[in-house]
Image (cartoon, one colour):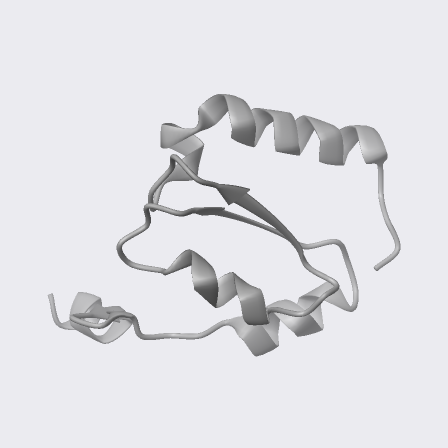
Length: 88
């Protein structure tokens, strides 16, 4: 419970990975899939990520879009695979 309180407290997500994601996106393609109904990480947080990161909004999903919007997630992944490796 203590770790959970540090990572996600009463105000939501307590850890930011923006800098790490931006650094990663400078080396390889990065995608963020986020649910608008997520009560831990507000979707608006994605508005400030690096423009090198592809952000996919899933309006009907919450914190687990891979379970709550499976078809949409699979479509996004399939399109990424079809596009092949991209240069960031």
